Length: 371
Ligand code: NAD
Image (cartoon, rainbow, N blue to C red; front, side, top):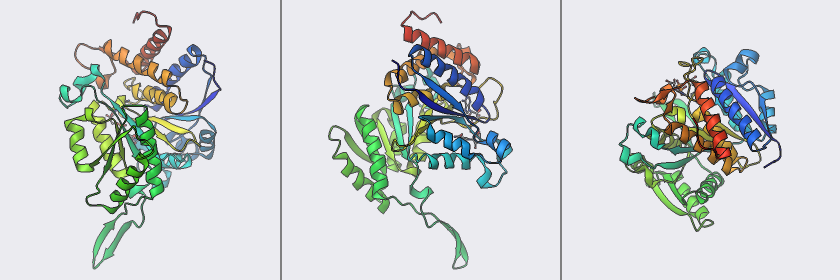
């Protein structure tokens, strides 16, 4: 399978970022070799490490390199050292700048409950078993960006206000992403709104219905956000693709993440209209409390790389091979500390990375597993 060279900008960032990046790099080199799939990894400074070197969390050179690549793989940024910097100099500002620079408007967060980790969740086994959904959250609009906003004094007392605003075009483009993805899954979109109260939600619902006409084979349902948050805990298997605006998506995606019970397992993607590279990153942060101790779980990072093959390179097979390797290793009982259970085998970040690489090689050569 020799394809065109793929340029991947790797932003290892801070805290556990460099450790989990190393494991993802090892995996990418195996894919490159076994699939005869040329990948060039370009490493750039981003976040705290970039602040230390340049005073800027997103140096110009880093952004330009990201723009010229086929995809961006980001580990995590931030840490206590940077918490007291002015807002425009903080690592998080770099993240917003990166998303803005690459025009990523859709955040994709797959939530899969691995059978072998089912006891890690606080929810009953029979409720979450078989859960496999994806939350698609609008990332650049809604109440987080709407104007007017602020805090001012009215009639002698302080008033705080924000504006939830969506243009029809913004709703259309995110709805299209959801329907396209649903078409490759179980063909169901659940659109989240609060149309019984909010005008902006009414427009959201009307527009999603309009877009759905182009996708007659996809089932569309609408849920008010309060009901959705209950259904997600009561019957998560009912969901396939959840489509939501920025605020509702932010909250529901964290709720959905907790179905799995382990933040070190969750990948995500931030994508745009395809004219710029997408960003793939774990849901978790830089975990400064465990950095440098070999305790970090590299699976979220590795599954983020898997998403990159699926969504940016259209290589579903490679995605599936990586996913299966993760499943195999978990079923064999290997665990990093964050997902450790009685009777399982505790491994370090590096050992988990090595096991995943070995499993991937074995899966690819279809040999009998010897791990
Ligand atoms: P966090 O996700 O870094 O950590 C929360 C808890 O989960 C910690 O106990 C940590 O040890 C654990 N954890 C996280 N990832 C893990 C992994 N892969 N393996 C094992 N355990 C893991 O969240 P936080 O503590 O709130 O934030 C720490 C720093 O990360 C802050 O500076 C924050 O701003 C930053 N952050 C960055 C991103 C990002 O880069 N996109 C996202 C969230 C937070």
